[in-house]
Image (tube, rainbow, N blue to C red; front, side, top):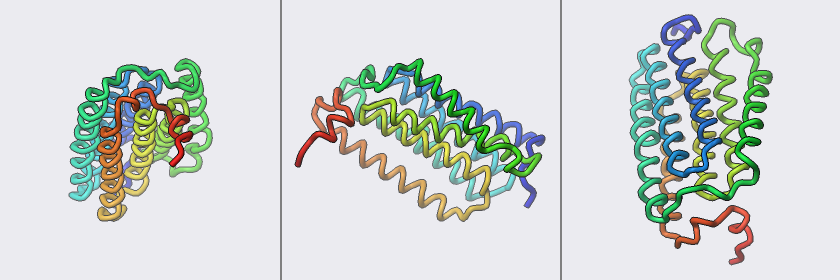
Length: 224
C-alpha cells in the first residue's frame, strides 16, 4: 500500500485541511461567545471528516469512508446541534466570563505551544517526503491547544469542548500515521467518546440555571 506523499494532490489537500483545523482551534481559543465557540468546533469536525475522506480516497478504504461519514454526522452536526439546543438555549448561555486569563494571553500561549509542537515533532523525526511530516506537527498543536482551552476556560461546558478539540487532534494524527489501523478499534474508540459526550450533555442539561455561572472551581468545592 503506497504511503501518502506530501507532493501528491491528496497530500496537499490533507495538509490544507490540517491548517484549517488548527485555525479553528485558535478561533475557539479566542472566542468568548458560546455559540461561536461551539460553531468553530463543528467546523473543525467537518473539516476533519473531509481529511478522513481524503485519506480514505487515497487508500480506497471503505472502513475509512464510513469513519468519515460518522465524523461528519456525529461530531460535525449532531454534537454541536445538541449542545446548542440542550445547553445554550435552555440555559440561556451567551458569553463565557469564567476565564482564568485574558484571551490575548491565551492566544499568545497558543502560538508558543504551536511552535513547541513543530520543534518537538520535527520533520527529521518523520519519514521525509510523506504528508505525515507536515500534518503530525499540526495535529500535535491541536492537541495542545485543546488542552490549553480546558485550562484557560473554567466553565464546565467550555472545558468539554476543549476536551473534544484535543480528541480531534489525536484523531487527525491517527488517520495520518496509521491509516490501516483496524476499523473496529477506531470506530469503537470513536463511538465511546461520542457516547460519553452525549451522556454528559444530557446530564448537564438537567441541572438548573446555576450551571450558566458555574465553574470547575466551584464544582470542586461541592461536598456530597
